[in-house]
Image (cartoon, rainbow, N blue to C red):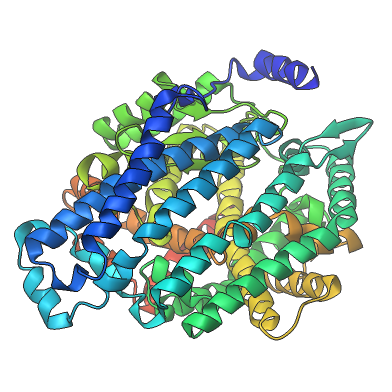
Length: 599
């Protein structure tokens, strides 16, 4: 009843918020098509194993192509079912049936997938010279990048039996701990002035205009996280050790290597990004938060003031229809065809927008499968930041949609580092539209400051998160970490990255515990900084009028994961291997802070 009342109040201010229609995947958990697809997976994985086990390295180019296409067909069915199960839990994690169904689908599909693990292992056994010869086949060559990416794991793969055990046991090891974390987060209730709020609602109050509201909300978050911190510590320690065991068996040189391999990016490129961002802390975050403290006429800001609305902040609340029109206009002004795709997300109800009890906090775009379409989840509450988030996720959606329509299933999947390109670019398009429409110095100053804060959250904060993870995972290889040790690492990276103008109280030491990326996808976070710095350089190229930019950009999105990043960005004359590239991206943030100081 409470959730319905909240929704009614929201509707008065924001208008009717859309809820996605998952029937585009399956009509229900009892849909006969779902049963048919599960049976097909079982049948086809068994057939695939019988046909190709111990034979992959002997296949001709035509037969290898045939095997990959069949594997794709199986993978599409798996992705479709798991996407549906995941989205059910995302829209209501408190629903017991949704959780049981999701777990059941994970267990069933993991069991079936065990039959086909051998394929990648045997693919990696093909002699390099023979592979070059095979890839002269025009049709097989389309999968060259996918094959190359799979073979990059060759030095770290184990024998078939061990790989099967690791996959089968993941349900009761890694996946089980992730599920525990998700259940805990979904069930948490934060007391706020005699109300019980969800995590999405309470964190929204940390950017409330009223300082007392922010403080009370922050204290409530700290208290509830602190009350559950032992369990959060156990989950973090267990998952870090689980990863450490796997890495040790695979002889991976560092905790980050597996993520870099998945992202198809070299260790030295990531090291260059990270060191460039860390070096920029004083010029960017330290300088900006000192400026913000001055605007608030304070010597320093409390941690709950970091995302506080500025004293000269525009208090505009966007209705859903205003947000929709703004985002569609921004994308359409860049390219009409992309604008039409964005409009499709709204018209076809591919978005879930209201804040509801049990709903996953934050925002994401789920690519699902090309035969259906992506789905977008946001928790829309009418702030300028919510419009930016909507634009961000729609960038992902457009990227996924175009890649899915123009590439085969395996080639459509984009590494995380490149996956953030379209999202951050779309966010920048929307920001520029709103900025150019502003008609006062005060409004322009507020918009610029908000953009700087978003960029600091995307670049500085995410690299600080990365540094936190790296330290935790490195230390966990040798010994379990106490809650205090984890909290100390957290506080150090926060102070280093945010600078002396932010002050903390004791409960802030627990704020590492709610961040889902640490649990779901270790070291995912640097992809945000990667994407932001990359897009800053890309957007600079766009504004400088590179010939045929729009078509080159759309070709990049259509390519999905079919090409490596260096090849994808060649048409834009961008070289990501150089440290100067990252400094160029960071300098764009610095220029915005320069402009703020002059306003």
